[in-house]
Length: 94
Image 1 (cartoon, rainbow, N blue to C red):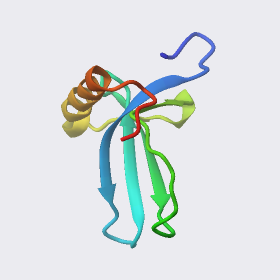
Image 2 (image 1 turned 45 degrees about the vertical axis):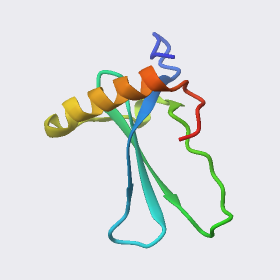
Image 3 (image 1 turned 180 degrees about the horizontal axis):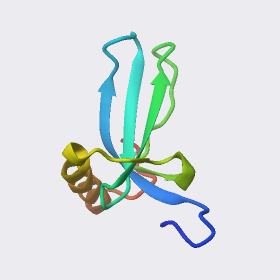
Image 4 (image 1 turned 60 degrees about the vertical axis):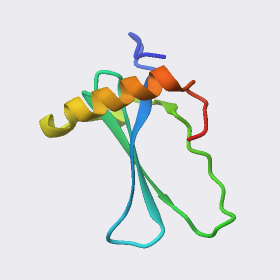
């Protein structure tokens, strides 16, 4: 799915998953548009080992929630979004 004229949603692909240095049990997920120019950052608290929340290869995001990617990350995000789109269906669990 891509952004349309009504601005309904944009499909973004998982390009980065890291653990927070500042707080324990926080996972930071970064999803980006296929061109790498826009991104969505999500923070997820892992409250216990049996706290299961699926992470999918892609999600649909509100365009208003997307930020502009810094120039130093643009190529990386574009390459990773392309790789994920080639290797996975949007609903694949990662």
